Image 1 (cartoon, rainbow, N blue to C red):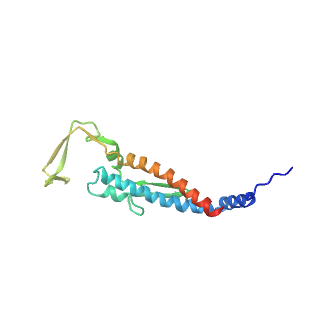
Image 2 (image 1 turned 30 degrees about the horizontal axis):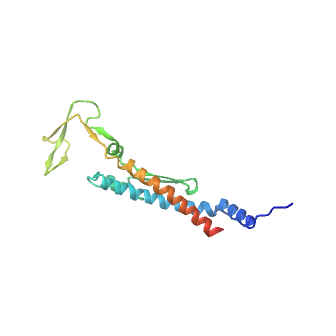
Image 3 (image 1 turned 30 degrees about the vertical axis):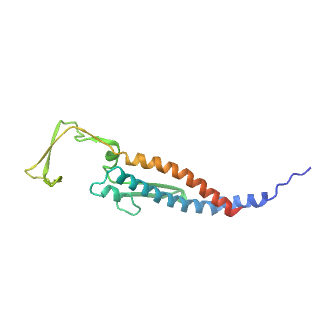
Length: 166
């Protein structure tokens, strides 16, 4: 007795083609696009949480910015995105105003309207008292949003690939 499945040979050939570059190349392009989507979500959360001050952190989450991280490896199937702005983690997680633990710290500078301008060596300035500055959790919120988007988008991309190849 012989059992035969119609289309199995074509299906196996398409899978073989996929693993020899077709699907990998498409997934690398898709992953690059998803990295860009993630940067957009992070920027939206920075704005939405009121984290923007000078715009340096906001702008560092953009492909090609000098402060960003955009590393592609494993033939395009791994992308690291982020920022090299050293204070990003403190803005997200929160921090103490005086990280060395002293109760007060003198910061030289002057006030320009409601904004303090740091000016090394100035005779004027402000005295900072040790206190906790809560984080805005922009990264945490963005990652939670992106996780949901990623799974749904991956399902759609794979289904699109299957539909166009089988």
